[in-house]
Image (cartoon, rainbow, N blue to C red; front, side, top):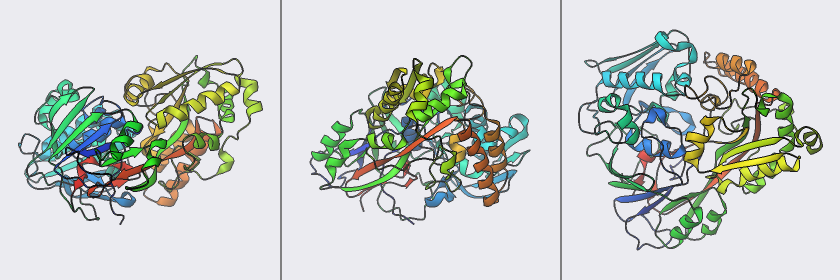
Length: 513
């Protein structure tokens, strides 16, 4: 197994994270010197309710406050977390909980509370259909808890082979009864006793900083195969810091122990620090296909694809990424498309014949290399004769208001999702607010492939179904694959946490040897 590194990530787009101790006397590359670690997020949190988490900052911080039934280890192997063991088939699952679990106020966490939380998640979270399956909506799924036996059971009317790994995602974090009773307060982080994770909020200043303190006696950390040496920091302080340049300066002056960089600032930290790079963000375009929008026209979508040059896009992000052939990359997903013939080729002359004079609104998050990729997309469309308005905004605004509003034509998606299933809710299913099909994409071939893929446990059949679905998306040009973005991780000795597919579980952050 790989040694866990401390990296930055959070499943729509990345938030750059930086960690530093409260002591500011160490030099570059020095280890954390006390039990406090400080993290910097590029944008504010949108919600403390894990079921409604939508931005990268939400995903990162909610890992501290809420635990899931299971965790995901290297190679996406499912490991125990709140659940000690499980028995799973294509239509049902029974989880046996660890003994002595508590809520964040010290009250016992019972099986019936876990069941109630999963039911809340199933009925509330926009992406829950991809945990239980759209065909299992309503009374076709039953979730029960047996407090005496300490077991939670999920039964589904129709086969759905993705239940177990999906219950390890942030949105499936377990919420205790006080939070379920007060969803409004839950969203603002003001409900004592709502959490099940290792940390509780002890100070909060919206838009500025947050403090989380370790719960005494918490021991439901994921059972990773790799060594979990060191100790959990007693306090984690998070501040909103939007500038990667500022983070780099703080690292160089010894005030930070860790930072993750999507832009060029990380390159000046090669001396005196341990660094690593890994693909973390999958960048692709999708369209607003509602009536009256240009994206509803397949000819328009093809012309946009012809205007794009994935190599040029990757170059503005540093040139170290992998060119995509789908909405995920094959290094992280064995069923991702690898057929170049399905891709629309760059053809500026053909694009210009269609796009000249078209008015197009392009949206994207500026958390990725300060929006350099979004700017490239806008300029490529202008080169094809289009009149482009670029909405280049902070990550939280992009995820919580710009995308759901539908007031855009093309979105530059910066996705942290590594699996075909978890990212598919952007391209199928319900539109906001019920779902995350922001562009109202409806592709029969993709839907059919998805349905076939999620009911089989045979890997060959699963990949064949996913290939059918991706071919449908690419032939209709519902997506325009671009490239991955390699993130540079810079950290000092003694600071680490578990990562998977470029994403960090902050609850596993450790300091010391």
